[in-house]
Amino acid sequence: MKKDKQIDNKKVIITIKGSTKQNGENEDIIELVTQGEVYKKRKSDYIIYKESEVSGLAGTTTTLKIEDGKISIIRLGTTNSHMTFEKGKKSYNMYSTPYGDMTLSISTKDIHINY
Image 1: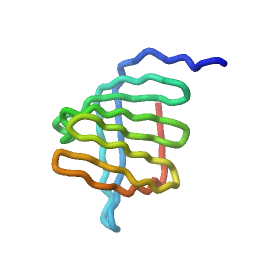
Image 2: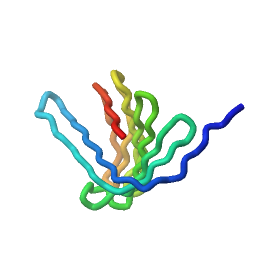
Image 3: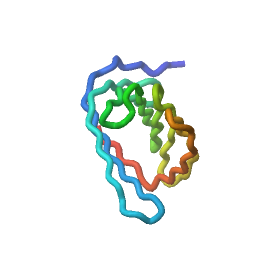
């Protein structure tokens, strides 16, 4: 059985753009530019970066796990969460903050990933 080779961590500049819309309100555009690392393990790509005070999540490390048509955002630190985004699917995710826990319902319309 052949194992997938793990690629050494590479330092990269990460740009993440997203949009959210709640209860028919106007769409909010979110954009983040930060430094992080990327590596590949098995069939998934992983992007890791430390959150800053600007994002309101200082003390948290975020890992993006990118699979075919699916992205998971895993946050550990002052804020803990595991959110999954899969095109055309709805997911329920727990989001823990210093102020309390909440459940998020996420309906993913589309996903675009560019390297």
